[in-house]
Every structure is written in C-alpha cells, then in structure tokens.
Image (cartoon, rainbow, N blue to C red; front, side, top):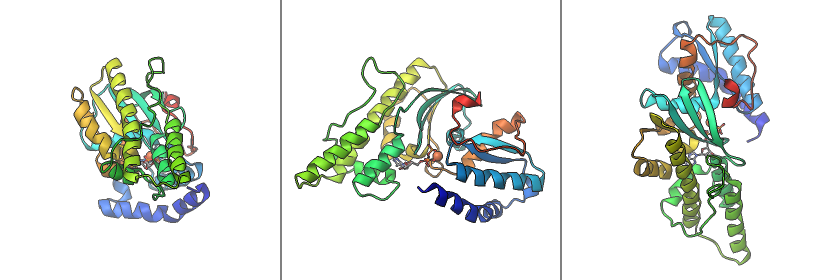
Amino acid sequence: MVPEVASRHHVEVITTCINEALAEANITAKELSAVAVTEGPGLVGALLVGIAAAKAFAWANQLPIIPVNHMAGHLWAARQVKPLEFPLMSLLVSGGHTELVYVKAPGDYKIIGETRDDAVGEAYDKVGRVMKLTYPAGREIDELAHQGQDVFAFPRAMMKHDDPDFEFSFSGLKSAFINTVHNAEQKGETLDKKDLSASFQAAVLDVLLAKTKKALAQFPVNMLVVAGGVAANKGLRDRLAVELLDVDVVIPPLRLCGDNAGMIAYASVCEYNQQHFADLDLNARPSLSFDQLA
Ligand code: ATP
Ligand code: FE
C-alpha cells in the first residue's frame, strides 16, 4: 500500500461514492440525521480525505458530525446480526490490529491484550507473499489450509505459563514460516502450499482460541464479538462454533468483516443517542486507540 496513492484515489472517488450510496439507499441528504466519519486509526492521508468530505457534506446539509474509531466500527458490524448485549468481550483481528477488548457498555472500551508486533492479517499477507500469492492473501491461505495438513509444527507464541495472558506475537511465527520455505528452496525442494497454509493457520488459530477462552474465563460477559477482516476466516469461524459452546458468539456477516462504511454508521448510533458530536475543527487521529477514547 502506497499511502500517497491511496489518498489520491480516495480524492478521486469519494464524491461519486457518497452519491452512489445515497442513490442506492434511495435517500436524500435532507432525510439524514448525522454524518459519521472515521477519525482513526489509519493512514493519515486517507483519513483526511474522508474527514474533509464529511465536514463539507455536513456543513452543506446542516447535519451534526460523529467521529468514529475504525476498530469500534469493526466491532459494531456485529450489530447487523443482532443487538449487542453488554458487557461483551471482543476479539478484533484485522490487517493492523489483534486485540482483545472488554466492552463494559457502549463506548466504554478497555484493551485487555494486544499484539506486540505483527497483526494477524499482516502475518497472513506476509507469508502469502513468500508463497507468491496475491495481496491480500488471507482468504486464499484460508482456502488452501482446508486442503492441507498441519505438518510443520510452527511455534505458538505467548502460550507459556509465565507469558502475559492476553498478549499476542506473530512475528516469530512469520519468521519460522519464511525460514522453512527458504531452507527448502536452498535444497532445491518446493513445499506444498496447502500444508504450509494449514500449518500456519493452525498455529494462528490455536493462539487466538486459547487467549479468547482465557479472557472469557476471567471476564464474565453476555457475548463474544469476533470482528475485523480476519473474522472472515472459515477456519476461525468453524473452531469458534465447535469450541465455544458456553458463550453467545457473534460474528458479522462475511461482507461486513472487511472495511466498509456500514460498520461506521452502526458504531455512530450510541454516540448519536448521547449527542456526542464533533466541531468543524475535527482532525484525523492516525494512531487512535480505544484507550484514548476514555
Ligand atoms: P485495521 O482494521 O487493523 O486498520 P485493515 O482495515 O487494513 O486494518 P481489514 O480490512 O479489517 O484490515 O482486514 C484486512 C485483512 O484481513 C487482510 O490482512 C486480509 O488478508 C485479512 N483477511 C481477509 N479475509 C481473510 C480470511 N479468510 N482469513 C484470514 N485473513 C483474512
Ligand atoms: Fe479495518
């Protein structure tokens, strides 16, 4: 991703995108109650384009502006399935984040653990590059994994007795994967992508499942929400369905797992009800975290 190219592309399409969304929803600007916009985290250039467009649209139509955290958006995509019940635990797994978030009430988020290095989605994309798959590689690895066997015994990090309960690390797994492929290449061997994918995915899912179970044991909640781009993973969905029988597991529908505008609208509803609006001096917050919202 080239940040400059990404934001330029945003400038080119944003007006068309807004007009098409209104036309498709068969709604006019006058019928809207507010404009919700992502303030962060994300690439600053892309965020600024969205914020500038939201401000202009809101000002022209005399609507209030609601700033939304992108990760809260991922979480609230689950609202499409059913009303969220609090307190809830959330496993957020995406291209830039891997975190367990305890949500006491709407808007009250506490990160109880996160990754120390790579995010899960990032690890998928990086090992995908080593296997010469197209970016983003998560979905293809997921498909390959279902046709292979866990034969490579890749490391499961942060799982020792004295390791922090809810922290993650995926860079060691990524390095182990890359070394395995390179060592084979040096011997003139080619490893089976299906087995590599199955072994990588098993290592990732073992850790995600174990940490989530531990979090649920420690924090009594009404619901587990699993969201973010990696929540589209079939292996993860299957294991959650089999291994977490005691808790109501809610996962957004596939089309709302990756980035989308609907999730930002859902996340803005509780802010709207509390009349939490931003002024026209709203700015991008590229490294916004849940911990900063309080
Ligand atoms: P963030 O939300 O942390 O800012 P992002 O918005 O770039 O990052 P998302 O759009 O939420 O990330 O998710 C994209 C990621 O999801 C990519 O890394 C992609 O490989 C991964 N992904 C998509 N589908 C699957 C799948 N089926 N299995 C595993 N990973 C997947
Ligand atoms: Fe995202």
